[in-house]
Image (cartoon, rainbow, N blue to C red):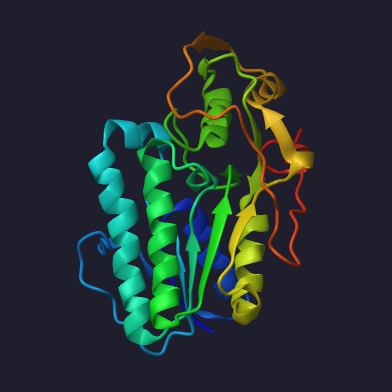
Length: 261
């Protein structure tokens, strides 16, 4: 296949590009970091591509509260431009949304929900095959983390540096951790059978077997920590429905190279 990957220099994007090339696909990457900012550039020509995998977006919930306008540009306008590329080229597109689009809380969740609505309308109006995935906490090798995003990576980096971490609220908030290799495996399956997934919005994550609280991860890594008040938009629990047909996560967080011991 000939595949266009947006957000190709980001965490999930890098893993997607590698996986596609390893199986022999031809890949073109677009990323803000490498000079193509989809939030303001005209639609990219996609004639001759078999599919688009769209990851380009902001990725921080707290960051979206500080800079909602930037989140809108990086998330909504980027999606609008690549969807226009898909329309002009008649090209199927797989869109990475977020579990936080479920309720639209926070500017980040609202932006992702807008992307889903716009993508769905492009499918309805123009007949473009559109697949939407809502992954939750994706983690794995090569991820950059901070207190604003990529908290698993940030906790691992804090362990390496001997840094104390902040737990916002009581730390009992749970997430179902999804290894990046499992998410990329879903994308590859969708590329191989676009018709089977077309029109679906799939809620995907590590599932109940990978549900873990923030405080459990902190203790698992042996981190020093302190508490601060709970942040706006920080949900108590996110566990995916895992309703993508023919797919399930295979890597347990305790057995991963990132968190396994």
